[in-house]
Image (cartoon, rainbow, N blue to C red; front, side, top):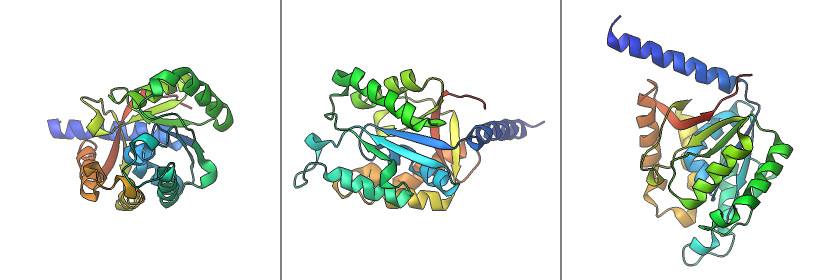
Length: 232
């Protein structure tokens, strides 16, 4: 067998294993330290799950009032987030909002864990998306670490935000179609307060998805850190 053929065979085996885990998913919980983190990290996957009839919940932990651009009012970004999640198909009833101060999550580690435990009991998700373990932002680190403590008996995938990663193990991929990328791009357009950021540009979103897809011989994909997996 040629090396290229062997490589493609291994890719197919990995894709089938990934698809088997995803096939058992009924409820998904996305953990976003700040508004837009979940859309940036797994917005295409959210759109795909909702298309498949999977129920998606979105928990966000700070309105980032201290870091909003000049001219925006408190909680304005939460309104933008609701509009963005509506584009992806998440109803307001499935959005859970907290009010922890931005860049101060490490001070509130126990309070955040307590809220995560309540979410676990109320939602009972089959899959949790959280920031990956190598994210350098202090708020993202806190959510990642406490979510692993809380959901360690549940499937957990760590999403990537490349501007916050000096390194990241990408060993789980979700294949996407053009329509899922379009939904992700359109959702992010609702964040008028963040449109100045280079990683909100549509060419970056599509380019990253194409780059990640090369690993699994597809056109588009989002890449994740496989943290824990439970075979049903």
